[in-house]
Length: 427
Ligand SMILES: *Cc1c(COP(=O)(O)O)cnc(C)c1O
Image 1 (cartoon, rainbow, N blue to C red):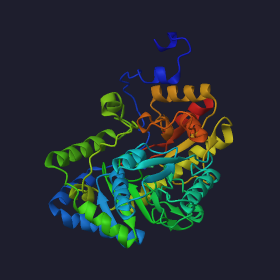
Image 2 (image 1 turned 180 degrees about the vertical axis):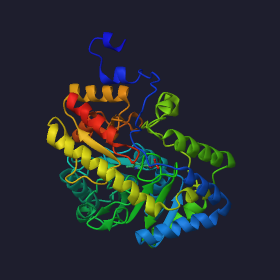
Image 3 (image 1 turned 30 degrees about the vertical axis):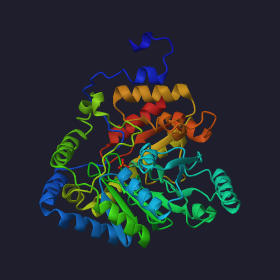
Image 4 (image 1 turned 60 degrees about the vertical axis):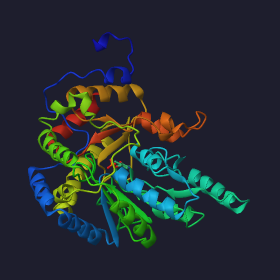
């Protein structure tokens, strides 16, 4: 059927092909959840607050921070950070983020009642385009020096996309005003380091995600870490007032954890992948997400995270190095991002040639190799945000088109790595 369409674009044919293919199918990203985690989770429900305090104490100790807060997701964490900041600086309402990032980030900014401001990114590092950042921040400075209108910039979000460290020192040095808070988006970088400092602790405040496709997962969850006293005080009040998960929400969490434990494995992942309504790995802009305190179930599931995180990262690292060795030596059509890639949760690879990219994605989709495009668009192209159509962020726009990501998660085996390499050889 597909072959009969004249020159079909990738998007047109990629989506409707949802045949149930019963074969080994790789999830694009995964932080494995085991039966053990679920048992610890259920014990955690009974231990309740004690279990949550245990997790919190471990995190504070590991990150060497004075304050840590636990909530239902990374976007909840970010929303709360921004609400607290806005209470401290009510006349500032803009948040500067990279134009190429997870849609949860603008969702959280809008949820906090604030405005999204964008800076383009560097195609080599996914970090800010520092020339553009400097221009943006210099014009901020001029605005605040002249006239009555003071600068409206509340916070800036350096982001460790896919786990690749953003240069926070550089961001710090460019800031015209210390009131502008550095909120470190370490959602994809738990356990990562930059210049032997822990990612998430380099800015004024940082957050992590415990969502499904991240470094380590408790189905869903979010962590905030900071040493800033006034900010921590505000955040404590806001999190104390968050609702608890209802009983049915907790039950849903437990059922989800069972489903993941069973179907995360490549030998069964074809099953959930065959059902579009499960919305696996879909990137959506939606500020109406639920905001909750974390449950004892999630805190219990996280038991032994200090062993699991480096263990998962070691496996990812070894998969990354086999794939990059192969791609660098044999495949000249693609560009590996990052100089010495180690801590990626998915391996980003730039493929400029549309034909090759489409062929790779289609073949991967039919063979279950887990290759995926990255984010569907740059943030300025999210319609709900209503950016003027004349406003462009060319690198971010190109990345959303040209970037594909390869699975590197702990559930891959040698044959999978070989299959992916063969796929690249043949296209
Ligand atoms: C996943 C993610 C978030 C949000 O985390 P959730 O737990 O999914 O809400 C924020 N920023 C980045 C860069 C992410 O990848």
